[in-house]
Amino acid sequence: MPRSTVARIDLQALRNNYLKACERAGSAKAMAVVKADGYGHGIARVASALNDLAPKYAVACIEEAWAIRDAGLTQPVVLLQGVHAAEDIAECSGKTFEPVLHGESQLEWLLKGGHRPVFWLKVNTGMNRLGFRPEELPGVMENLEKTGALSQLQGFVTHFACADDAGSAMTAEQTSVFINATSPWPTLLKSVANSAAHFIAGQPLFDWSRPGIMLYGGSPIVGKTGPELGLEPVMTLEAPLITTRVVRAGESVGYGSVWTARQDTLMGMVAVGYGDGYPRHAGTDTPAAIDGRRIRLIGRVSMDMLAVDLSNAPGVSVGDTVELWGRTVGVDEVASCAGTISYELLTGLTSRVPRIVQPSARQKPGAR
Ligand SMILES: *Cc1c(COP(=O)(O)O)cnc(C)c1O
Image 1 (cartoon, rainbow, N blue to C red):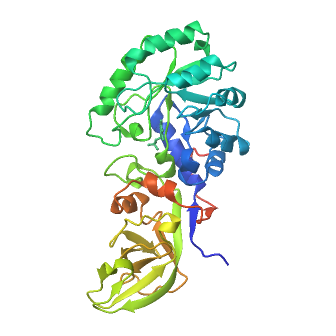
Image 2: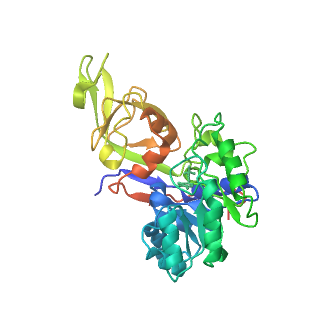
Image 3: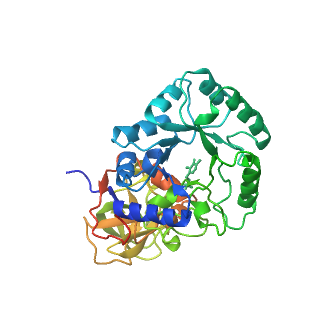
């Protein structure tokens, strides 16, 4: 029998979160961002679960778009990083993939080849990773017009650097740079919003928003958890308790002996570790839960197991299920204890952990 370390996936929660994104997007439509294997939840699984709701998907690269087609889904798929080779342009036009072209070499591939997929242009408004600078846009647009490619241009995309920080002026600055840069072409579409931008009061989301982490219940906002933003956790990471023992006062637990018992302490070992994607940097006092009660990690996380303090849950026994993150302990809380963000924990869950779709009875009004 396999060990019962699993990630339970609640697809109804995913659908509710998507509807929440739509509600927040107002008149903008929401392309469901399902890159990085659906933020670790399984790209085919999450894309299929949103099939009747999402008019478009977005991924990072073409192999992720193929995964969506392999799942039998027909919506257009936006390639947020464009394409990585000239021959992918032809593939895009045949498969209704919409690359976001971000630089000169990608434009050359488009203009040289015989295929003209629908595409987007990335505008660099201050993130300075990818995209054309505002002052380069007129030249690019002229070139597209001359070569007859303009008719396939869907619109403009930009990405925010600091939308997770409500106090930052950067998002408003980038928005105004974007509005100015694209104003000569008012009929083309605009897309700016990651999840965080859905939660910024007064932020224009234009024609298409691009929610990612919020679909999975993770918080895009520093200092807030997903549930505090009205989001439902989609993944519950569970693992069995495989032993319990009393660690005597003065004894230590695990590698490096970094935790020592001050008094006799009921301790349990849980069959999950960094080999499963549980963060090794989550140290003593990181929360977990058993039987609905919150407990804490002690000592160092190993590859295949970790130790918990069971003082708070004396009645438990071997075989009982420990929640590492989910409804009782938020993934955002664990991430913050590990000095990272929920994105990294969710996408970092390894293939050793089976993803199991949770049958769900809960149905919200408005969810089809
Ligand atoms: C990943 C990504 C998103 C989604 O970001 P979240 O913070 O997960 O909502 C949106 N736009 C681009 C360009 C991305 O790369």
